[in-house]
Length: 224
Image (cartoon, rainbow, N blue to C red):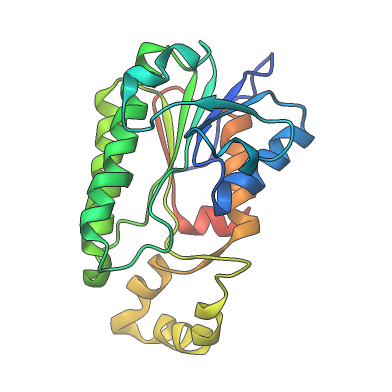
C-alpha cells in the first residue's frame, strides 16, 4: 500500500509506549527536535531513562485504567513496547508483553479518541522460525482494527543499527537468495531495514496520519 496521508494543520501531542527502548529513545529525540510535545508511558523508576524534554507518564502498560486519562484527545499514539531482541524461544513473552500491551493500548487509544495509532508490527511473509512472533504482531494489528482506530502498521523484518549489526555479515547470502528463482520472492519480502530508515518512516506516518488503515511494508520502509 502506498505511503500517503495529509499533514495535519496543528501539531498533535505524541503519546508513546516503549519510549525508553532501542527505537523509542531515538524517535523521541527526533520528535522533540521537531517541537512535538511528547508524553511517554513508563513504569515508576524509569523516568530518568527518557530523553530530556519528554514528559513521563507513570502507569502500567498492561492495565488500561492506569493511563487512559493521560492520553490527550486527538493525539498520535505510537506503540513501540515489545520484547527486546525477539527470538524463537520467546513465544510466551510475545503474548505476555507484546500482545498484552498493544491490546491495552488499543483500548485506551479508542477511549481517548486519538487521531492516529502507529504500530511497529512485523513482516507477515511466512517464516517458520519466527511464526509465533508474527502471529502475535498480526493479532496486535487485529486488536487495533477491532478498536475502530485509524492506524499505520509498519512491517519491518530485522532492523539493523547500533548493537544490531550482526545480520550484515550475511548480506552476501541474502543477495544470492534474492536471485535464485525458488527463493527470490521470500528473500526480498524479508529484507533487512536500517534503523535510520525505520525512524524516517515513523516520522513520516506520524506527520501524515490517515483515515482507516495504512500498511507500510519492507520495500516502502527501505525507500525512506
